[in-house]
Amino acid sequence: MTRPAKALILGVFTGILGILASCFPFILSLEETAGLDWLFTSRRLITPPDDVIIVSIDKLSPDALNLSAAPGKWPRSHHAELLGKL
Image (cartoon, rainbow, N blue to C red; front, side):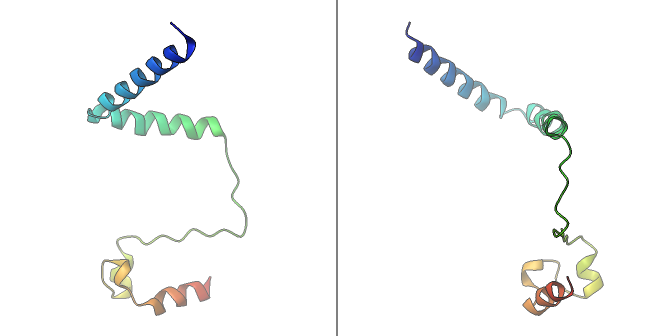
């Protein structure tokens, strides 16, 4: 068997195995927990730039601002005010 044929068979086998594995929730949760932990551990710590700010909207934010629970429906003026303060 030629080398390209072996590579093709291996690729198809790996693809089918991946598709079958995605049908089982246990395997997906294992990949999310162990796989992501391993990836973050293997890449080491990355120091973020000083000029980067991460803003998050939690479940308490709409209540505190008397706004809709869907941030997409918030007036743009609130977004502009937040950006102005940052």
